[in-house]
Length: 412
Image (cartoon, rainbow, N blue to C red):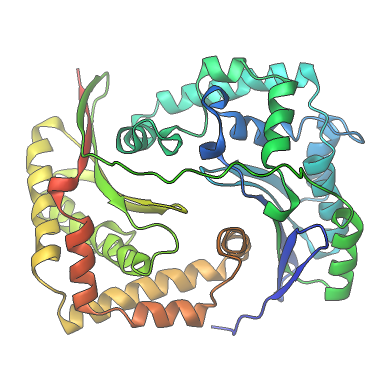
C-alpha cells in the first residue's frame, strides 16, 4: 500500500483540519462535530439527528432547494449522519469544486436559519424514517438491544428519537442545542482529494477562520457504569425469530480494542469462513443472517451477536453460539489459526483504506476523538503484534455468556 501522509493544522478558533492528497479526479470533504445523541437532555431525544436534517433546510443565503442543488448541479453528493457521539456533514465532488463544497459547508453549519415551515415538514419525514425502522425488526433490534444493555443511560437511546419527541422540537430547541455543544474547538474538517495545499488552507481560512462557535462549556459526558445482564423476549408479528446477545466491552482508546476487533471478526466478521457462519449456516443450515458487531465509545463499548432464524432453531443456535464462545475462552488460537485471522483482518482494513470516502470519514472521526490518526503501517503493527494469550484474556473478559444480555423477537 502507498505510504500515507497527512497534513494537519488548527485554525485560531480551534477548528482542526486534516488533509490527505490522493491522485484521483474525485475528492471528499467532511465536517465533524463532537455532539451526538448521547449528549441530548432527556427532553431532547432525537434532537441531534433532527438538526442533521434541518441544517439543509435553508440558510441566510439559500433556500432549501438551493442548498440541495449546490452540489448536485455539478454531479456531486451531499449527505450527513448522526451517531451517539458525533454529527457529520460530508460531500463528494470533482476536484475543481473544492471551493463550492467548503463555502456550502460554512453556510449550512454556521448560517442555517431553521425556517418554521421547513421544520414542521421535516418532522413528518423523520417520523416516517422512524416508522420504516419499526417495520424492519432486523434493524430495530439493534437499537432496542442498546436500550436493554445501557438501560437508562443516554447511550441506550436510539438516535432517531420518538414521534412524540420529534414533534416537540422547534427553533428554540435547535438553537439551545447548538449553543450548548457546537463549539469550534469540538469541530474537525477532513479532506481526502487532490488540491494544492496552499489553496486548500486559504479556502478553509476564508470560510471558517473567522467563525466562532459557542463559548459555553460543553456538557461533560457522564461515563456509563452499572451494567447488569438482562434477558428480554418480545412477541412480534414476524415470520422470523431475531436474536441479539452480547456484553459491554472496551472503549475506543483501550489497548485491547484491536484484539477485540480481531475476535469479533473471527466469530462473525464479513468473511464466509467466520466461525458462527460456518457452524450455524454451513454445517447445520439453521440461519441465513449471522453477524457480530463491536462498537466503541469514548467510555465503553458493546460487543453483540445478531442472528435471524426459524423459532424452532432458536435454542440450538444459542447453544452452538455458546460453544464457539467457550472455545475462544478455553483454547488459545494456534500459530496457523492466529496468522490466518490476522491476515484476514489486515486485508479487510486495507481494502477499506482503498475507499477514499471511507478514509476521509475515518481520519475525521479519529482526529475528533483522539486528536491523532494512525497510519496503515501503525494499524498493521498493532494487529501483527497480537498474541494468542492476549486474545485468550480478552475472550475471558468479554465473551463469557454468563455476562451476556439477550433480546429475542419471537413470532406471535
